[in-house]
Each structure stands twice: as C-alpha cells, then as structure tokens.
Image (cartoon, rainbow, N blue to C red; front, side):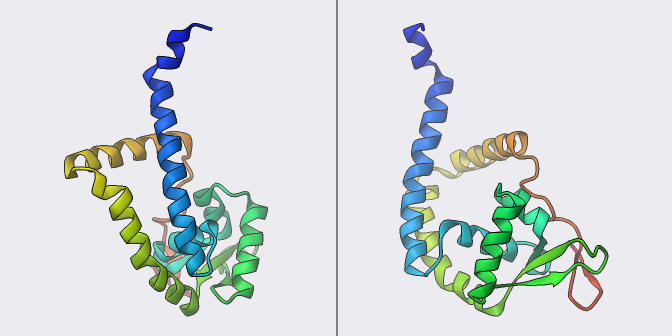
Length: 169
C-alpha cells in the first residue's frame, strides 16, 4: 500500500472523529454513572424527552438509537422495571407500542442534564467559535442523514397524547 494513503485527509477526518467521540463518551459515561444511568439509557431518555408527548413508537426509538428492535426492547424493559419509562399501546396499530418517559424518568434526566451540559460546554462546544460550531453542526447533520436516515424517525409526526387525541409535532 502506498504510504501516502495514510496521510489522506479522509483518514485523518475519520480518525479525529473517532478520537473526539471516544474522549467525550468516556467523560459522559462517568457522569451518567453518577446518576445511575448507562449511556444508552441516557440516550433513550433524551430522545423520548425531545419527542412530541415525551414518547416514540418502539420502532422509531430503535431507528433513532441505532439499536435493534430487540435491543430497544431489552433497554426499555430494564428502564420500565426501574420506573423511568412506561409503555403505552398505539391506538391506531395494535402491533405497535410507545415508550413514554415517566415523571421519575424526567426527574432523573433533569438531575443529569446540568452536569452533561457542563461537559459538553467544557470539552466540545466551548472549544469552537460560533461560526465553526454552526459549520460543524451542518456538516454532522449532512453526514448523519446520509449514513443514518432513520435518525429522526417519529420526531416530527403527531403522537397520541394518551387520551385518544394527537399532539401536534
């Protein structure tokens, strides 16, 4: 192999992305553990809290988290046992159900979020000028949409409110 291939900026870009992700993930994991959450549990809570009605269909949650449907089922089962989530039947499709954040789940997220935001500011967004951050966000969205088109599944649809009505997206 040509030695110059290792100097290719594409290799550098992916390497830097991996290194930044690994460093941030380690800092996040330690902080989540202080609040009794795993990284995937925090992601699930955050995805649900940011969705209409604090809920997503299980299939959409799987698509957004890149977990398999069985993986999401296991995580939701565990979080339901811990009182952080509940399931709600989908009124329009008996085969589907929604994962819904409980009050206890929202409280855990509220307790975790200030430290999480401090880490983000210190080690990520605070390292960038506003224009650089805007450009990075645009670039990351483009890459995310190309490699993970289901990442926003269910986030803009109307979701049931629990009383048969639907909440606007």
